[in-house]
Length: 418
Ligand SMILES: *Cc1c(COP(=O)(O)O)cnc(C)c1O
Image (cartoon, protein in one colour):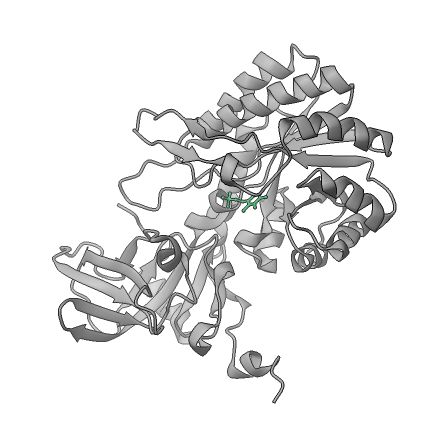
């Protein structure tokens, strides 16, 4: 059973001040999870999580993560600017982008960020753009083909197809690129890869680590380049469905350690730092979308209309993603009603739930849509003239703070030329 991190009495107080819909975040959950991740990789002295800013680009959240020792993984100009304003600087910023505009390389360089190159041709592009090659540089690897990790005991199968993805260098390009970068002034190197997303298997990171550690050992032996870090990127998932088991981050850290000791240590690379760029794992379970039932409709199906829509949470419409729903105050009521829970967009895929068994919903009920803390608010958009919601932080002391106000019509009209 999935339980909201907020109670009905707490929510009733919060909605007095901040009307629905809004995204609510759980400071305690965020901090405790960040500490578990750190503990799982404590065996690696240089370990650092660079939070994927695109998952939840909200300063209050970024500052909490920075206090927990995380860096920021940015992918665009505005994300770099936000990270800087939140106090991240120098090696605390990873810049992992693709199809990169020149001004973004310029700002990343000015901030002293670690630049993660997406392509062989970006070596010359970067050199031309900033006038040199950074002393520390990272390259993204794409092994091509199909990446799969065997079914775990839970029976999950993770498959992705790097051969169809637009990212990264080929293996041959890395063996050519590293010496080229070195000749242009690079002194310290990192290797990055992102091969599968939202994995629910403790084997994903260890499997990826095995591939990257062997690649690092080969590159080191072949080119003599100083490999300083391996960036395992994002992809560790969360159980969106109540029947899915969660990843065990301690087991994941231990699995990466075994590969480290098996491959990197014998290759003389025991000093290498492990980096991660998790987004979903860091935030998804510690955010929820709070919305209210505003209409009910009885036609060929039973519909509950709520005051949030896909513009506030795109994942169900875009990917058919499952997000669990709790009808607040009815946690123990039987799920004996079958509903489509829908928003107001003029798009029939604007459904948070399709034929979902839920307790009887009455107008005015508060609904918590779970696991929206990552790739939730941030994927919002303004279709149908819908406005972005507020974001509220449930602090460790139980109080609530507004961390982003809701958009107003003035915001929506601000860019128009009449
Ligand atoms: C999106 C992204 C991440 C975070 O992915 P999650 O699945 O949220 O962990 C990390 N690194 C890069 C380069 C990304 O594009």
